[in-house]
Length: 272
DNA sequence: TGTCAGGTCCTCA
DNA sequence: TGAGGACCTGAC
Image (cartoon, rainbow, N blue to C red; front, side, top):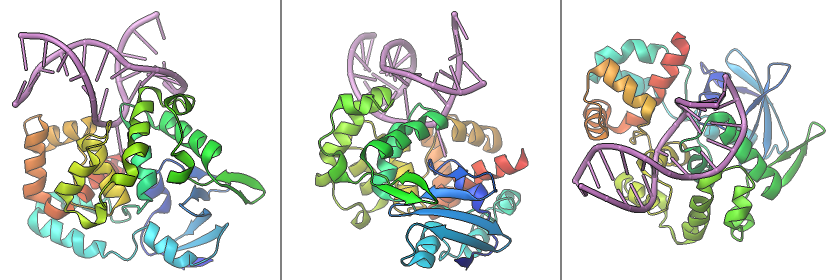
């Protein structure tokens, strides 16, 4: 299916660090696993050619996943109007979008991500999917969907340890244990949603912020990791502590703080 | 061989 | 209340 996506760069978005399962193929296309299907995407200018294991509602699914219904031009103009000094950075990110990923998958992925590297995070997630996710045959190859709560509810610490998640095994057990009792995050304010997620062992402010940003479309969170800390201290001359950085982001970027942090990553990559 | 990785928890002062 | 060490393990 051919879909017009406009001025975005699929490869840069999928490999920007928030998606752990996309794979680049020899022909330049990218295969990725969404919550209910496998997709293979090849970009040609403002169009993408999508092959999928499931064609139901495919255009809508792609639009949602790449956040194509949101008016980024409007947001960018608003950000630049308030902060003229970030125009150059935003100009490097006009082809970037925040992915809308499955919230359950984001919770588990970002619990695994703490104090970890991307390669190892991907390995653990792929192992988890292979063992407990639904098998899908696509292009004569086996793929595995991310497991559902029901597939994981009886797993033990030892089961997780076998996936190479290390000390995060007990965090995953605690998450699955508390998951059915969690309040509906979509009905909560961002502050309440952060606090609700942080009731789970192994979810601190950074992981909770990432979950809200990539799993719940909340652009007003600011996931501050060591990298963002360095960037903010170097570029904005702020004190090197989370509270100062948080205050600065809130005052300057407001409801789009999370998006601006992603722009910081993305522009830095584009400058390299 | 040692350090580090897109943090969080726990202990102790 | 906050500073600092411990934590799995594979990549570099």
